[in-house]
Image (cartoon, helix red, strand yellow):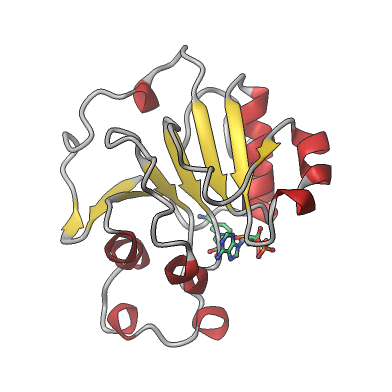
Length: 172
Ligand SMILES: NC(=O)c1ccc[n+]([C@@H]2O[C@H](COP(=O)([O-])OP(=O)(O)OC[C@H]3O[C@@H](n4cnc5c(N)ncnc54)[C@H](OP(=O)(O)O)[C@@H]3O)[C@@H](O)[C@H]2O)c1
């Protein structure tokens, strides 16, 4: 797992001690993106006893089935980051700049952002900075204006609920 700021990888002390590192406390977790990865993570986090908010681009009325299946609470994108202990962003990389400009305004300063997004040129189009060598998470961090934590990019969503991803309280 790596942590990125606008100027590259961050040292491990950037976030200090936060609830993210807690083994026992219930967290409030927001997830932007309710596709293959977001839905698996929502169910996983709820199963661990956390309170989960989830949002997509089309609105909470499109997430009723996901809510029934996972126990996560669908919310407007404008609500998903407010007061959460951890925010997960799991959308196509090209959609990151399309997020509302104030989407992070209610996110506490100590709450980390977990970024699963990968750069696929065929899906996301040409992003010159990444083509020139910037990592996708560094780019995401610059677009958002906040550091992000990168989840390793080799996992299939199903690996999160099979033996590859231990069902303990680790996030990544
Ligand atoms: N780290 C890893 O190991 C790993 C593994 C697999 C995939 N990934 C990456 O994780 C990301 C998600 O993958 P996925 O397979 O879950 O994608 P997916 O199934 O295509 O789902 C994408 C989700 O993003 C939402 N979304 C798109 N634009 C949005 C916006 N502007 N605001 C809010 N929500 C938006 C979509 O909602 P709507 O349908 O309402 O637009 C949908 O719920 C991708 O970047 C993918 O490459 C990472």
